[in-house]
Structure formats: structure tokens, C-alpha cells
Length: 300
Image (cartoon, helix red, strand yellow):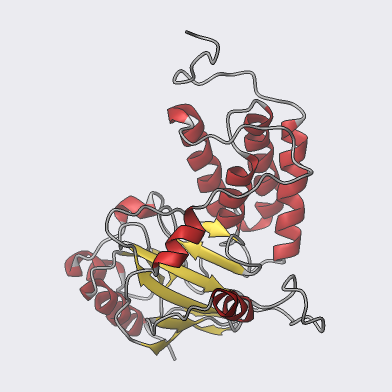
């Protein structure tokens, strides 16, 4: 039986790696605090004060402050067709990817999830900044980096626990993965005409952060409503050529990933359906507000 003391010990242990941690609601993967990325800590006093008494908070590692990139390999039912990776689980998709490139992944800190997934921890190389991604490397492979977090070993949910299976010190993320995660994705053929924003400005950046934060803190009974509203709002920015559709979709999918399995009926398929429908609807009704940082392209 997991106790508060067990969870506290795990949180303290993770902090010794230099990985800031923060509490998740007991039995879930939802943050128990707001502004979690800024409030995550390695301070033993603060950690001990948080994990005490009867509240059995789960543990999260804030990957950005920890300078970590975590590959999140999701499980699914393997397809009977070996020529497609559409329905392959994340681990198989990663194996096919490395095989095709003729590379191997070094051993690293590895955690298994209750549903049979795997988290592979890597250090963010010096001078590199990476954001969360969803399906960029292959179907059912997400990454957690700046702006993200992972549920840490020692945490438990009703369907099982997060278990450490390899405590190898994480090496730097391999260069080929850095390259793959920094390449700009091709625009979707069915997406509205748009201009990808390499520097969206403070207005769009704040909107993106705000909508994703709303999703992560959505009340249990309003997941679909909050997700749809947030995607529609960002879709309006896409329609106004202020935000790239692929950027919007990836950030929304990453944020919504924390709703899946959070004691509700959310599934990856339903999340994708809601995001795509709401993004498209918002793009058909572009927002007219222009960020102060935007410049007239015709200026000379």
C-alpha cells in the first residue's frame, strides 16, 4: 500500500537528481497547484511540508526546469498490417524509427505507466530548447520538455502505479532526435491557409499558454467543453494567420494528454476529434485582434 511517506521519499529522491517536483491530485495525473512549472522545487523542506499528513499527492517532474526531454510511448493495439505504423504502439513505432535510421537509443532512466506505456528520460543538450510534441516522431509518441511534466515513479492511479524499471542516469538526447523534434512539420492538406509563426509575439504566446493552462485545470465534468472552447479560440488565431495550425494542434494535444485517464472517459481519438473540429470552426471565424508586436509586411 502506497503511503504519504512513500510518496514523500520518492519526491525527495527525485529532487536529488536536480529535478524539480510538484504535487498532483491524489490518484490522478492532474496538477494540485496552479503555476506548477514555476512552483516546482528541489527544496527538501518544501517537499517534506507538501507530502505529509493524509493527502497522498502523486508526484510530477517539471521537465522544463529539470532540463529533461521525456519520450512518452503510449500503448495501443498493434495493427495486423506490418506496412503501416498508424496503429502501432509507441514502443514499436520508436523501434521502427530507429531501425529505419540505423541508430540505437542508449540505456536511460525508464518508467513504466499503469496502462503499459513507457517514459524514457533524456537530458536536454546545452543550448537546446525543446517544447512538448504530440505524434511528431511517430504515432503514439509524445515528448515532454519545456512547458510539460511527467508523472513520476512512485505515483499511483486506480489502474496501477508508475514504476522505475531502469535507474540509469539520463544521457543527453541524441542529436538525431534533437533534429527530428526541431524540424518544422509540413502543413496539413485539410488545414486552413495559414502562416506559421516562428515568433508569435507576446499576445499570441500568452493566448497559447492561457488556453493550454485552462485545459490542464479543466474540471472533471467539463473536459470536452473546455477543450473545445480552447481549441476554437486558438483556431481563430490560426484563421487570422497569427498562429500555425500545427503548433496549435500540438500544444492542445499535449495539454489534453493530461486529461486522458484522469478518472474520465477521454480517449486519444475523442481528444483528436474535438481539437480538429474546434480548430477548424475557429479558423472559419478569424479573430480580428492584431498583436502589438505584429508588423506590416508591406512596410519598406
